[in-house]
Image (tube, rainbow, N blue to C red; front, side, top):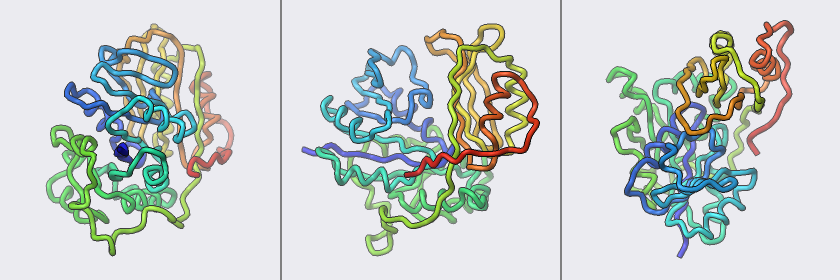
Length: 317
């Protein structure tokens, strides 16, 4: 019997990780396998982790969380050997869900259940106008069976209704308390929500041109001055960067840091992992900011002193 596979897509900061966190914290989950881009993106409570082995976390509720270490096919095969009842794939923030969904048709022992795209309701109008990523965001929505719209609670009723009316497909509200994570557990298609077969855009064969993205990781055994980090985040917040990870400050306190476009925040890292250092991942549209300079500022506190350059590293294949 084939294992149902659900693809969860959405652009930077839409709320995919928050949705998965709410799902993984449930105590009544069936054996579910979750494939994520990296463990740093999902903060799993320490008391939920039963065993850690390589790129796999075994959770106390019987579920398994695996990192996609460069080969989705290998990761799917490893989950198949663990006899999970269902598999959920968190697509990369800048990926087209259709490309991931193709695995549901071709991977041995799997069948595609549905494609869900998480949409930032508060920031959608700005993203659609963005000359670099507007087309990508629109494509991610068009390739979904159902849109899960977050942050509508941050808008007034009229603005929220306007967002829902503007969407290219069926949608539901996915703010905390609305139970949207139930759709991740449902192994059946959501055809009852979706457009008819003759009007739904095809998932594969997309020809739209999408931007290239720069990606840079920082992994150093050094402490950073918290006020210097905050100053830098303020300075680069207008460049549309996605930054996530953690760092240790000058007092030995570990901080989780998240930046999505013009918003950022720090919070104490309560996970049971006291190792000092700095581990961050930065993603940005190619040419918008020099990530090497940002890295230098993080590690040395230097002021930007030369025009930004960018080395293009396409993340969409």
